[in-house]
Amino acid sequence: MSSSDYPFASHAGFLRAPGEAPGARFGVAGIAYDGATTNRPGARFGPAAIRRASHMLCDAVHPLWDIAPGTALVDFGDLDLPTTSLASLRVALETAAPRLIGAHHMCWLGGDHSVTLSLLRAYRQVYGQALALVHFDAHCDTWEDHFGEPSGHGTWVREAYAEELIVPQACIQIGIRSPAARADREFVRQQGGAVHEARALRGAESAAQLHPIIEDVRERVRKAGSPPLYLTLDIDCLDPAFAPGTGTPEVAGLSSAQLATLIEGLVDLPFVGMDCVEVAPAYDHAELTSLAAAQMVWTYLCARLAHADSAELP
Ligand SMILES: [Mn+2]
Image 1 (cartoon, rainbow, N blue to C red):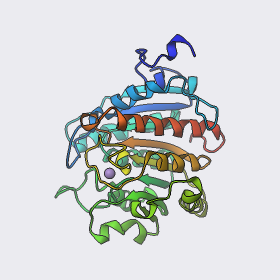
Image 2 (cartoon, rainbow, N blue to C red):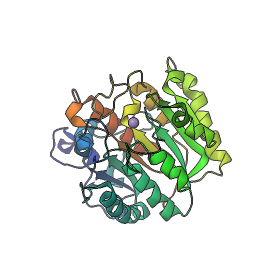
Image 3 (cartoon, rainbow, N blue to C red):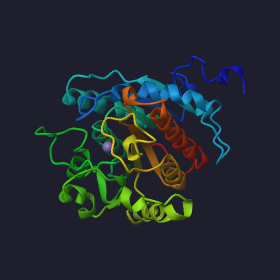
Image 4 (cartoon, rainbow, N blue to C red):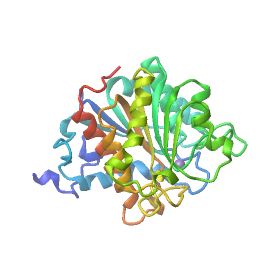
């Protein structure tokens, strides 16, 4: 460890990654938009808080795989995006994202969950095929409208299905528990996908106990012909005890250990990118939420490095 590894060093990037690194395999970019939140706003400040929390991870060597992103990572900062209307945000993000996806394996830091629809559109365009999706969330995000408006942070799953951005049977939701009408809660299952509710995960902590979920993801991706796989991680999948700093917290959620076990267990699947959304630092305590987010993104990155052959750039 050198002096540049001190956690309070001023390097601003995620894991202190530089803002320019041509040829870096992995990229991080912030999407500081929270205009589609329904309850507590503030996720636009999520990317900065996640970066700051990631600096605590020092040399970033992951103890499970003895590997660190090191020079393979570039952090583009928060993208220059409008914070006005969702329509404007979508146009700008869908213009900016494909170039980054074509050049780097990207980890996107939200922002509220509305940004994921734009990202899925961009991946669909770049890869030329529908994606498999692992979706951690307290919310099903299958609502038909956003309180009277067509699109928001709770409609993107239904929109992604309608636009054929995702393979119906290869969409797996994990951690769902918020109040919702049965038709919305069951939407993904009705389309052929899987919903692993948080209630079914209570008490399942060990790798062995969580194995059936990991196997379900693996099996669904395989049966779909191993399409490009995308991970969307709404930090509110975690219980508010582990992630209070979010806009729409729901009690009785996953523990950090459950989430880490699941993400570590999916290590060798053909992921092409991920996002981590809905971190709202104004409601956080002791950086619990931003640290959990940083830890999960770092784990995802190290998992990709540990399985370098699992997915290539388009
Ligand atoms: Mn959510």
